[in-house]
Length: 220
Length: 259
Image: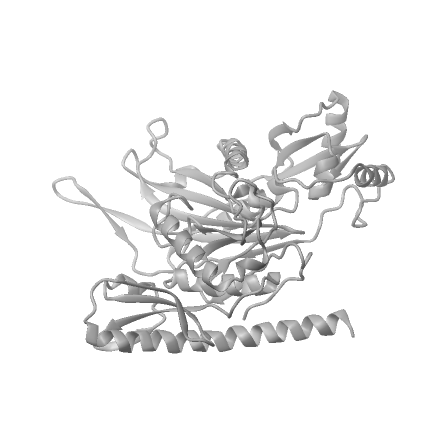
């Protein structure tokens, strides 16, 4: 179950650890208001992401933790997802850094990253339109499957990754690879949406419990 | 090294406190913070360990793979080290920012393990000149809270202790070609003897006293540090001086008395 270390300096910087789902762990986010003059946007905040995998996270040892094509693509996807969700207009000429570190990979890397980064952003106090919940889905043996693990992903069937804003049912990111007949597409997206909504319920409960705990500790 | 910005007043406060053997968190000059060591954290690896020393958090994973022995040591396997400074530790480590620190740590680890008695590399050999076990030791810096080298050395030792290398048999054909057979039982494996793996102790000189296990703030006040790698039997395997200040030869001997 997820746990939160005490917030060091809530207004400025928040570091959070989260176990997204065993055995797949993601250690996310750091948020700083840094005056990065060169790349600053005049009307909104810049969202800067880095996706990094530990070299021992996959079955085969990975040589470069970040900087290769796959990591750059994931970084871009995360950036795209969070630019859609964070209210960047509130922080012009500032930068929000989201660093995601994969400790162990067992399928659904991108989805766990998004879920972890959502929680971390909430923990940092950055206003968002809605939670961003993500889940993967596939289609094996005429059955839609939600949340594929590594073995199911490696089987080579179609995989869909979906990032959803649950309250408004808006899709932040939709990605599919391999081949899927269009008749089956609706079922698969349906399965992924339902999984996202389930994740939303879990994340929401965790946030509420944490806020309750913190307010009790701070004393009324 | 990741560092914090301290005001002059804060530095003076820390330095004066240490002259009186009182550090900011109430410790004495020779006290360590509470250390948490957890092994077998990552199931994908042959061995892993996580060490938390105050705010410093290190994760080490060891993967055993088959390779060819090096030409100069055909009867031995070997260890390869890699350090990754995660951007979570400080934003300075984003992209290629952490490479300098990573190289420094890797070089120190290689020096410590270059000693023959540290790890029995002959036991990692399967077929002389043809096959051997290569242990890839990957260190991941999750959080920087001062005293990195000590925590890393403890984590590496714990991860090597936790490493399980599967037993293999070499079958020889009539034609002379060799085949390697992995044992069917997943629990049938060899463990490494880490009794002689040293631990690093870093002594930082602050004012005219030296402290053990410095936090980030204390490191910012220290002129220079001495890094010693010591085995359980008390033999010194490596020594290194870090930092811009200069150390008196006498103070070096004084520091060595501490450990």
